[in-house]
Each structure stands twice: as C-alpha cells, then as structure tokens.
Amino acid sequence: MGAVGSDYPDTNRGVAPVGRTAAAKLRRRISNAFSGAVIYPGAEGKCPPHHHISLGGITVRNLVRLASVGVGAAIAIGGAASGASAHEAAVAKTAAAPAVSTACTMTITHPASIYVSPSFTNGRWNYGKHTGARVTSSYDCWYFQNGFHEVTLSSGDVGYIYASDLGHPSPLPSVASRYKITGSVHVRNAPSTTRGAIIGTKTAGQIVTSPAYKGYFDNNGFAEVLMGNGNIGWISSAFVE
Image 1 (cartoon, rainbow, N blue to C red):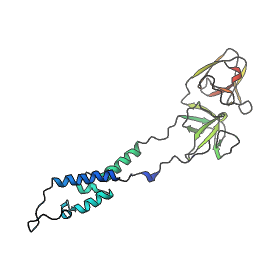
Image 2 (spheres, rainbow, N blue to C red):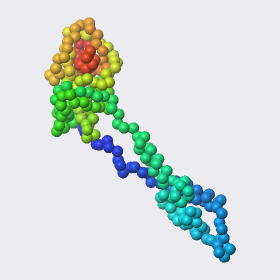
Image 3 (cartoon, rainbow, N blue to C red):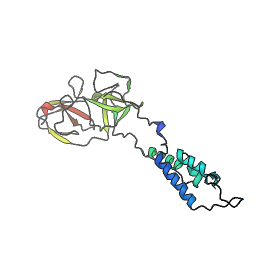
Image 4 (spheres, rainbow, N blue to C red):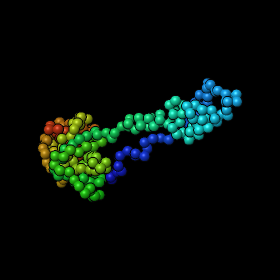
C-alpha cells in the first residue's frame, strides 16, 4: 500500500447550502405568518397590495425573494429561519465527526527507515525515525504485513516500518492463541532469518502465547509470539504446533 492523501478535513465543506425543500418550508412559514397578521387599511381606507404589506419593515416581495434563494431569511420572520439553523447543523455535524483513531503506539528501537509500502523494494520516504521516537498506527499493535507495521506520519500520510525496529507496543496485545514448541528454536525480532536478530531461544515442550489466531503465519511463515518483556517476537512456524 503506497502513501495515501491527506486526512485533513476539507474546509470547503463547512456550510451546506439551503436547498429547495428548506426554501419551500420557509415560504409556508411566511404564508402562515401572514394568515394571522393584522393588516391595517391605507390612507384611503383600502388594503395595500400584498407586495407592499410589511412585517418588521420587510415587504412580502422581498420575503419571497429571500425564501426563493434560501439566504438568511430567518431575520425576516422573527429569527425562525433556515439560514442560521442550517449553518449551526453543519458546524455541529463537523464537530461530531470522529477523528482518525489511534489503535497502537510503539517505540523505535533502532534508527529506522520508513517505507512507502510493506516491502524493501518499492522505495522509502526521504526521512526516518530516531531511536526512542514514538510512532502511532490506526492498526492493532499485533498486525504486520510482510513483517512491516503501518504507521501514521506527521504529514497525514502512512508509512511502513519493519518489525526489527519496533518495540514496546501500547496497549499490550492480548493473547489470541497458544503454541507448543516442538524443538529448540530461536526467537527473532522480525519474521526473517536474515533481517531478524535473535532475541531469545525456546526449547521443545515450552508453551508460547500469540496475539494472532492460531495458524496465522502470513508473515514469511513465522508465528508471532508475545515476549515476557512486553515486546513481540517471531518463531519459525516449523517449530510450533
């Protein structure tokens, strides 16, 4: 998976325009308002034409124009309008939108390169992470693809860091399955015999726990196991049952 676009909200979507339905409702409100209005005769004892009748200093003609375009007509009928309420609804909806969730935080254990996909061959970003830096992810801490964990970059893009450069997952992954070790085998800090350093050894008969479901060996044929120090280790699936 390559880098994706920015997660920043689109600020051009802040206020939804008042549509035809809202305008129709507003026209009905104006009509209802006039049905109960007291209309005084003019100087000659005649009622003025409807387009000269005024509520709050605004004529019916102008009210209808406002209702037709759906703009700020609320002030014409005592504040009971759609323009402001539509804006408030849009703002409330934007405020209620959930932020991108952070499911995992890990610590960089060695100077780490950040790749554009879960592969060593498809390129990497032109910057990395120093030892001790914290990285976040929207995925659970146990989830790796080809030995890589997807992380969220400060730019809003995503990158991939190899398992050998990650440690101290938070929150600690829960136990999903258990394995019995069938022979003496090394535990590594990544699912690879060439890229993963040895961090422990297990012997036949020992039981290990895994944050992944049993039989999940999609990371280069390795079983993911939980270490006593809270880190994640990897054992060749040929030595577990």
